[in-house]
Amino acid sequence: MNTNKGFTLVELVVVILILGILAGVAAPKFFDTSAKANDNSARTTLAIIRDAIEIYTAENGGTPPRNSNEANFLTDIMPYIRGSVFPTCPAGENAGSNNILMGAATTPAGGEGWRYNVASNVGEFFINSDDLTANQDDDPTLNYDEL
Image (tube, rainbow, N blue to C red; front, side, top):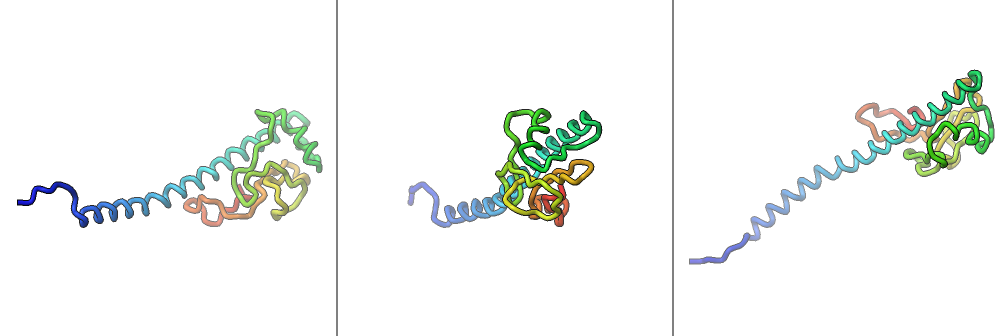
């Protein structure tokens, strides 16, 4: 009579196979969640900056910041944003940059994370990237500069 206790090689292979399948299913969900979190962070940051532009506009007779110079724009808007540093762009091809492309450009250019349309009467503020967002389940054609 054999009294050895333990798992057979077949049992171990089956367990490892099941764990591999579970990891294969869970890993893409995890990475997709991270990308969607970046998109949601981008939407929130945009909302904060756009709100600051709206408050500035309301306090200045309906005129949005019209500075063609990034430093002057930041001087105008920073009193309406909590913190002492302008937020970095969390998404797009220039993620991590807090520089702003100033002007009426309609297509992304340069390495700036943000884009502000100086010529706009409403102070349009965008992410300076035409990459597709990670929220492809919601809209597979949505670009970051359309948020």
